[in-house]
Image (cartoon, rainbow, N blue to C red; front, side, top):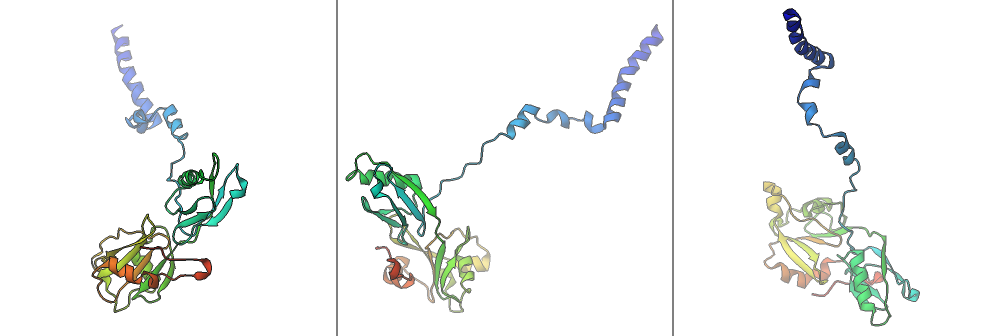
Length: 244
């Protein structure tokens, strides 16, 4: 009886070793025990779509403004270079920077003077081309097609690069503010070129990058004096520079 008991005592560990050898040592490691249970793994495949920020209108876009109960007021029109649209029942509205839903709310509020309980639907029917204007001491001044995340230096390179006379540490970045006026800030691209300082500005449609020949002491004064010369105006399309 004692010999039988000894045989049984050694049999259980031996079987465990044989099992590990049969399935591979990985089967007896801790890795398998740390995996999530099957139901959790399956749940990961049911995750909802990643949320993205709602699109915001820019100059050059085209919008279809519909009044479901006042069809005669429907209009399809572009967002002008100054960022505005003009409707019969509201007059001018600065649409650039708004989401379609935000624009709907503004149109609804302003049209209540002429329409009873208006409902408004705004649909973006066309995304305008995204261009920035690069001027001053560059090889080929003019419009540059924007790529996602394009920086002032990249736009200058697309416009032929700096001339030898360029003042790289006093480049002007000119953008339209929320009130429709143009605002300027000075960007030191000499530090970017020489020391590899990262650029923080990302260009948007209708921005202006101006490379002067001499250092600009007051960017705001410069823009007030020369903005209409920097921004080409196509009178055939009724394009005008926004007031300051």
